[in-house]
Image (cartoon, rainbow, N blue to C red; front, side, top):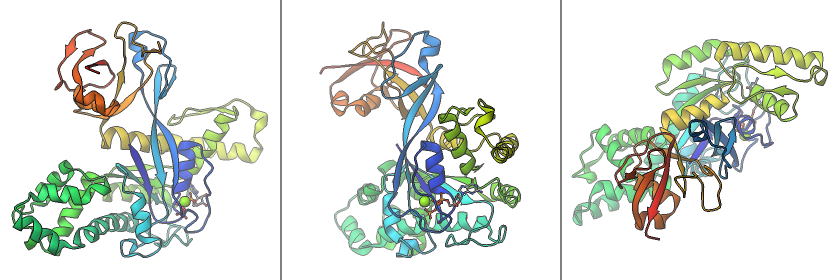
Length: 398
Ligand SMILES: Nc1nc2c(ncn2[C@@H]2O[C@H](COP(=O)(O)OP(=O)(O)OP(=O)(O)O)[C@@H](O)[C@H]2O)c(=O)[nH]1
Ligand SMILES: [Mg+2]
């Protein structure tokens, strides 16, 4: 799973990545600080199965902290997008191509209104961040449209002459963008587009189709960043009223400091928490203490710094992922080497045990015989839909 971090230049995308992943990618108060994408690994938190099964675990692909399993997810911070990027403006399509693999997008917006469309600093409050939300969605839609329009006539002629299925042909054509047949089918249905005569689709039809496809294949949340600025509060309310997507107020810079101080053992802080505790008063100057007080006040107002909340919303509310723990031995709950509850996987709600087997190893799906629920010790058939926090064994012929 890949979370793409997008937005116009200078809105705080790299600061978000650094805060979420404790990386040190370059940040600057000017546009296009980032050109090559910065990858990072962050964690989402779920209740670990060790808690209710009352076992001591030895996690391998994830981390367990006092019964909370931290599961890694991949993030990608990309270059800033400016209006017309889909036509090649700014860094253009290169930026968009970096997002091909993204399953969900976090759109970072400068809620303080102190950067214009190109990411140049302007007087605080003078730019309307609602414009950023409108333009970014438009850019992604037009990126899809422009890919679809290449050879559209030739493509649709072939479909009609050879009596191919438009859904299959479109899914194949768009597969490089991480778009599946199910995505295409849903988008066609929502856009109410005739599947019989694709050669008759107008440009408006293509835009309507791409608009629906964007919502399904690249769902988005809005991170209303720089919430610490005076001009942000009113804009955050306006963004929440305007946007169809979830809007999460955030102070990514504050989260970055908290995470660093926690790493240095100067404070006690868990990402996403609503408070932190100073462990070493002498480690901070009077000015730094003032900053920390302001940060606590901001967290009190918004519930958290918004960074972990954005990741959790993207993974659990938008992608609807659930954690599942595969084991080799249902009595000891261990793998072949005796590690108890070694791995936690994130899978979409509705995944069957057989589909899950295929995610662990393609061979498993082919040679799948049945599953076993480690809690009940009962056999489960291939169509059994997994639940959050299930612990399962896969029995295969291999
Ligand atoms: N006040 C405030 N400033 C922030 C916050 N997050 C980022 N900034 C500042 O915004 C500026 C841009 O931050 P970056 O993280 O480099 O922004 P970016 O979106 O990656 O920019 P490009 O790579 O140029 O597209 C820097 O001066 C940051 O310190 C925040 O939460 N509050
Ligand atoms: Mg950057």
